[in-house]
Length: 253
Image 1 (cartoon, helix red, strand yellow):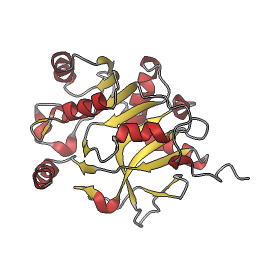
Image 2 (spheres, rainbow, N blue to C red; image 1 turned 90 degrees about the vertical axis):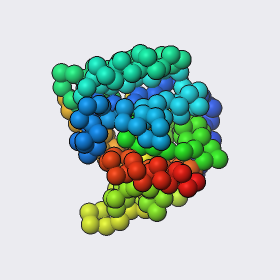
Image 3 (cartoon, rainbow, N blue to C red; image 1 turned 180 degrees about the vertical axis):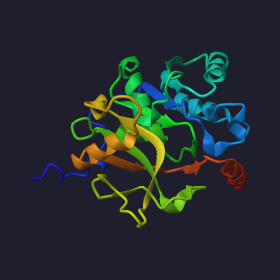
């Protein structure tokens, strides 16, 4: 029998272990969000009345997560001050990248010594989501299979990727395994910026700055990168125009 003979990404987490730790990627320069990021880091840009970072922490609380690592680089003092004054009920640790911006993969790799739990959540700060019938983070936890997976990405159908202008990121088979969109083609699923990963994903990772895409490609080649479809709303809020569109659509729902 093939190791892929069962629907891996559709079966419940055998251990039922709840998520405990997350990392929020907050170090980016926010160039696409200018001029809003001229005086504030991207995670503090407001959508629907509160900073993006606060929305993320609301979702983390709902999922029962109590330990969060946040990396900082651009306007790091402002981001750290916000965390000190606005987050009292979650244990927050800062991973300092003031000296050198490490991109998505390098940033998580640097923070790994601060993250004891395995698996753990990684969340980009430039997306906004509304949970559907199932909490998105609890959905990831319920579908995690530690034997088969190194990364489990929350994806959304391209047709439901609000404010997103790309052509999709991934194809996904019946078992949940991911493959890349081919150049010049369209793929049916968009990465939401939310993933559940194991420390295994970062074994033999490059030094310094690098994209998580490098690690995903390795996991895809090994058949260890999976996806699960988000059941609620998702918005790509990477630009000022997308913020206005997001707020308008939220008001209509």
